[in-house]
Amino acid sequence: MSDKAPHLSHQHRGIDREFADKEYFDKRQLQGGVAGWVLLAGLGVAYVISGDFAGWNFGLAEGGWGGLLVATFLMAIMYLFMVFGLAEMSSTISTAGGGYAFARRAMGPWGGFLTGTAILIEYAIAPAAIANFIGAYMNSLIGVDGPWIYLAFYVLFVGLHLYGVGEALKLMFVITAIAAVALVVFVAAAIPQFDAANLFDIAPTDAAGASDFLPFGYIGIWAALPYAIWFFLAIEGVPLAAEETKDPAKSMPKGIIAGMLTLIAFAALILTFAPGASGSDFIKESGNPLVEALEAPLAYGGQTFISQFVNLVGLLGLIASFFSIIYGYSRQTFALSRAGYLPKVLSLTGKRKTPYLALIVPGVIGFVMAVFNQGNLLILVAVFGATISYVLMMLAHIILRIKEPNLERPYRTPGGIVTTGIALVLAVVAVIAGFLVDTRVLAITAGVYVLAIAYFGLYSRHHIVATAPEEEFELIEEAESELH
Image (cartoon, rainbow, N blue to C red; front, side, top):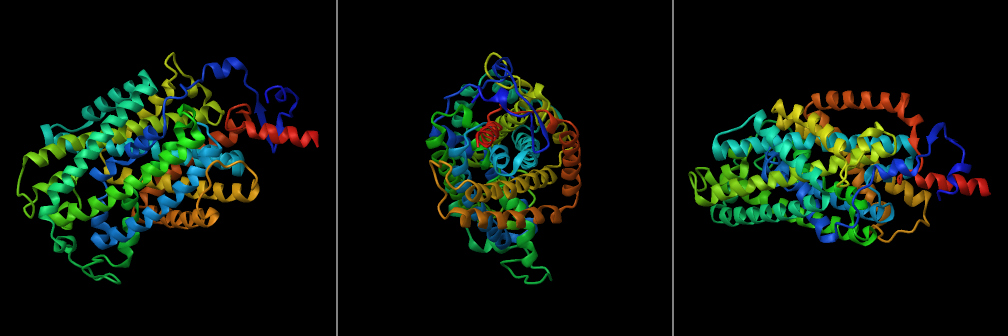
């Protein structure tokens, strides 16, 4: 393909294109072949597992147990169907761009940019929310919380990623496996204390449709959606590891689907037995709900060896997601930068083939956000960015099926565009729910988008690197049109 590049027009659909030389990409190389499907499944669970330890329970305060249950069921369908679509696209378009690359191919540079920016908002903000929950768990363990804790964790885990991706992914897998054991131990300890009446102990309001099952009425289901998403948020980041994966066409679908099925099982167990042991009302605003569920008066009535074990090892669950989402934001930043959508300096890689500025810069932004200690609000901002990207990625799948029906697809989504169409509708509902819960979410996200769109519209869209992996297909299209 490179021998065609010099003969192609630098103008295409109003975009000035830059053709990078070998030296440009030599400075932007990731380490390939370090992950198989098992590690990818572990990465998918690692991205999300913190959502089992904290954050989801805020949905109890918005919708009660019944509202959160219905919301979780709907979001589980959305994510499962979306994952089927992502499995197909990631087996076909295996680059570090992930969702940005899929949308870029389907909807052009603007579609790719808007999708990539939404994912970046999600991935830059989610670790800040998780840092706040880490602080709550640390406070429960040793009585220490605050900015120094957040800074220490950012420095430590960004530093580990700088050391090397192979080592980082393997360490993430081990941490995630231990955290999963903590969830199993929690469920085993909560089962003897389970009482179905505890699920419905939030007093019904006078809202339309209010009952013991839906204490905040039908609107409570809507309000609980963003917190139900926290059970699954970031699984879509698995395709970001495509360029560092062995045989991505086969490994990606296996890894992301296995990860998603694991997360659905954990969500069902935690949503049932945590409030069932302690009472929904008791943990609805907790920063470490699993520990408090075991120590609740209705459960064991104070600290036990098991509650402290869950606290200590549960911290690893938060760390697993914190650690892995740092990986995710760095790869999204790297891909957007390498292709020229963000400042190109952000995609430089060091001797160990890690994108050091793509790790550090979003980390600094996340730390600043964490200092405000607004975990609940940060969840909503991350979810809002995520759901925007889900809408665009599902549109990408549908458009690609229609636009390029003969594209080689090693894995095909069961049900095709009907499946991703259902995910698309649910994602639109989730977007609306996100900013209705707290209008500040829309203001924060819109502010970031305005700045990003201004940069892209005025500068970077005129300096896209046409030979970046996510952009190369357009060179083929141009070459074929010239031949004809």
